[in-house]
Length: 231
Image 1 (cartoon, rainbow, N blue to C red):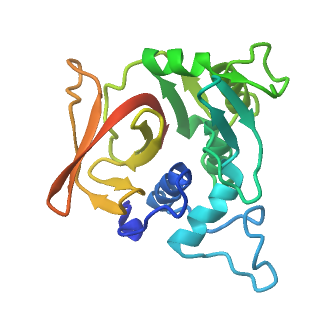
Image 2 (image 1 turned 120 degrees about the vertical axis):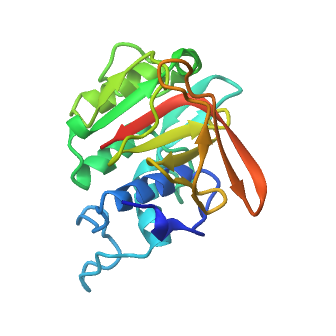
């Protein structure tokens, strides 16, 4: 299990980082054959094994459905033409389910800081799946209603991935996403795949930052408190 196929692969658009992180996570689990739902361009040719960039971009066409207006604390679900918005965790868990990860293999977590931030964002087009219109509640309803995953929080991130796991982390004040496994980090912003360090000491401290070295320079990614655990 590895992110090696994504070494040097950088996200194509500014908001597609979580789709690229999800693509690397699915590759980690050996789940890279496109279901019919995503394979929209080459069905006649039976093309179901795209390269890393194409695979991630196909995922982004589904997951890039959340527009955030941070000035007005507003969130809107939509699909732009072309798709260019943030990745919602509800869409990410849906995609993971389409590739064979059942709800008992996916857990979405948030800490107190993330809970506060997400509760401030009011959904302008609530789906009707929940009585509350803040983003955290709507996302929770969309994730657990089908269900695509379990949701737990507020909890602190106190355990890095175990063998066979991958964690998709929101970092840099909710502006970026990366994915880590037991030994590797993949950062779609730089295309880096390799070792990383954290400040997690199980039972003593929780995650505040992911760090790695890229071209000899340290890269520090502050943790935003929202993550997806896949196994």
